[in-house]
Length: 236
Image (cartoon, rainbow, N blue to C red; front, side, top):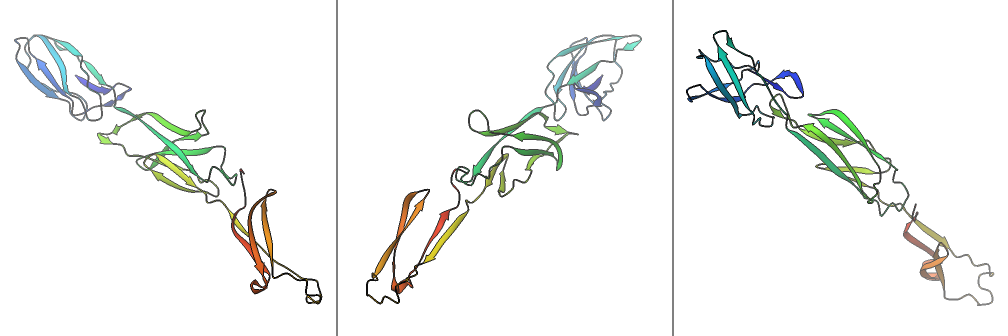
């Protein structure tokens, strides 16, 4: 018997354990070697039933029962296959940028899939119909050469954002840009010759024509004022 990968018959599978039932009903086991085959001792003529007991590492069990006829000329070679165990990887893109306040968010980003540290696939993500940024890599082999594959992701750099990866989710952060506005009151009154200068004045700050803040300015302030921590952008 020969044990192979169902998707690629050139890949032979070691470590599969078969339960073999002799014509008289007695049972024995055979295990495939590194060449994917099993070797038994002398077999009497008759009909043998063969069923997989333990699949190769990284493969789905094969529950089919096979019939092997042994004649004076020998037994026919039976090729038995297993499907590799597959997984899907999915993640979400999270934007931490005050709802794109500065208008810096791109229309798409690229996520790369790494297999044991080597890039093997890439996918572009855009805003989905449900208002989410999601991606997936599907139908991936879980094992290779009997070892579980380590899948990780990276992201192509996004201008003016920092990136943090947690598992398969990605958070891109951008701190909205802020500015400060300052000024100074200048009096053109011959150094208050007529005594009309007030003790204080009020400076109003308008955002797109709407008052949002005010400051009282006095001589003790040097007639200077400033507003700090102001958003430079709104809605992009």
